[in-house]
Image (cartoon, rainbow, N blue to C red; front, side, top):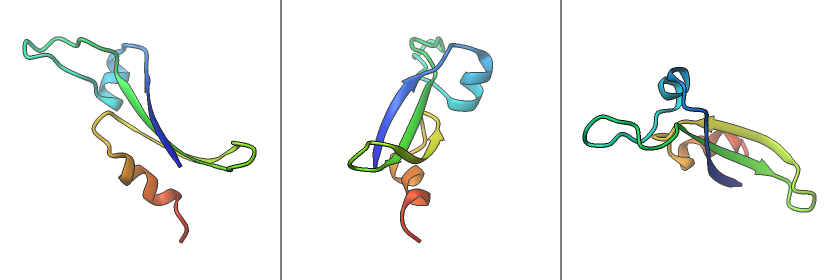
Length: 69
């Protein structure tokens, strides 16, 4: 498993869906960020499954559905 953030285009829809950093004065100093957690095969690095969340979603919570049942 691997988790990482990606910057998304700075649109109102992306801010609503994924969230982003907000400065004390209410401005957005950075792009909205997407949290991605992938389940990958070790030898080929092929992505077998993935979960996508926003800036406030925890990597652990996104990873739980990727684990064995």
